[in-house]
Every structure is written in structure tokens, then in C-alpha cells.
Length: 320
Ligand code: GTQ
Ligand code: FE2
Image (cartoon, rainbow, N blue to C red; front, side, top):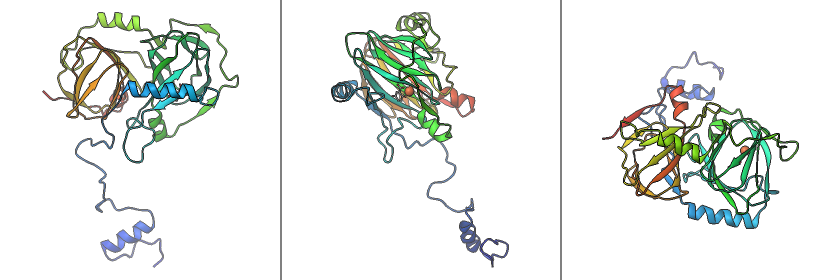
């Protein structure tokens, strides 16, 4: 019998063995990990990164390495599961980044979409497609995929921000392109404090003032930023009054919360997590979420919810 002839096999076992030799796997064979399962069961873990710890790391990085060598002086928040050295959650990565007064970080562009939420900055900026966007404390600045972006700092004190990107999704789908700007730092064509890529702290607070808490009680006062130029990353800003307790829920979206103001305690997947300014919490999809603000708090969150809605995978469930 020729090795590639499956016509004359006499038993199921023979067929299985012969097919395997031709890179054909019978679907009826028991596998260690099945193809389908009842409900989401992420390998990724709920995890929190404390700002106090990461900030000290950034300060040491600023002391030890310049932006000439480190194109981006950042600390990536790797989900602590075996074999993973990049992804924060299945589709998302995030990092903390810092820049010193007078420094610049060269311009580049890549297919992954990105944004920054500014934790501490007076005078830092990002040049996005030739337009200089101020990055002041509390601002959110978008760099949609394939837009040139480089950073710099005209102020007097070290600046810090949170970066969020969809790099793991790009890795999965494989359309990765990356290019350095020929000029190093892209020349500034215009200064644009008002730009669809920039959401100032002031504008966010005003929009939140005009928003009522959601009727379901799951999210409190919350707005979605317009990220249609980068549809894989949803960004919400939420503001909770001292004492706010959310109704528990779970949804299939992967979510990362960053604390912009205040402190609180949340129950995430049954785990108590105390959070305060600058902390980041990664929450894989289908994990129970119940937030509690202990003083007036503002959190920014990034999510693949809109991507999951578009693919019709998204599900939401109230847990109380
Ligand atoms: O600032 O351009 O944290 O390209 C990771 C990759 C930041 C950036 C990160 C990046 C950037
Ligand atoms: Fe980048």
C-alpha cells in the first residue's frame, strides 16, 4: 500500500495512523485540549501591576539607559503565565513609558494600533503624523496603526504615561509592518492641541459631568472615547463617586483598567484587588467584575469589546 493511499485501510486505528502520517487529523480522536468547550476559560490571569513599583523601575531605567539606545523606555506588563513574555491579555499589551525633559524618542510607525493615557506630565508631547500633540496629565492620545509617532518633552520634570496596543492581535493575524522614520524624529508641521487624536483631561471631565450613571449600575458614569480610527481598541473613561459599588457582571471582552485618580477595591474573579493611582489591572474575558470606589475615582480602560461586537462574539451577563 502506498503511504499516501488511505483507500485500503481496514480499521479505524489504521486510518488514524495513516492519516496522521499525511497531516490529516481525524476530528473524532480524543485530544488533550478539545476543539470546542462550553464557555471561555482563559489561560491568562487576572493581574495587577502597582504604579509605585513600576515607577521606581522607570526611574532606574531613566538613570541607566537613554532614548538613543532604548527607542522606547518602557516596562511591558507581561501576563504572568508560563511561556508568555509579551501579552498582557490575549489581544492586548500595555506598558509604562517615561521620558526625561529635553529627550526625544524617535518616530516610527507600525500596523498595531496604540494609545497613551498620561499619568504625570507637564510639557511632554507626541508628534503624530507631523502634528505635535501635547501630552498633559490625564490626557489620552491615540496613534492609530501606521501613523508616524515620536515623543519628546519640553517640561522640567520627568514624564510618565501608560501605553496600550493591540500587538498580540497583530501577531495572531500576522499583518505586522514596522518602519523607522527616515528623519529620526519626524519634523513638526503643526501644533494641534485640538485634534481627534487627543482627549484632554478637561474635555473628559466635562463629558463625564454631562453623563448619567448607566441604568444597569454596572459601569457608573462612563463615556467611550471615539476610537473608530483604531477599531480593535475600545477606550472608556469612568468616574465613580466615593462609595460607588458596581453591580457584578462578566463579559467576553478582555479589559485592562488604569487608575487615573482616587483609590478603591474591586472583586475581580473573586479576588480582592486594592487599587490606587497609576495601577493597572488586567482582566481576561468572562471574569466576574465588581468595582468599589473608596474616594472619587477616575479609571481609563482598554478593551476588545468593539472588536468582539463586530465579530458577533461579544456576550455580557449580569451576576446579580
Ligand atoms: O511609544 O511607540 O510601549 O511602539 C510599545 C511599542 C510604546 C511607542 C510601547 C511602541 C510604543
Ligand atoms: Fe510605537
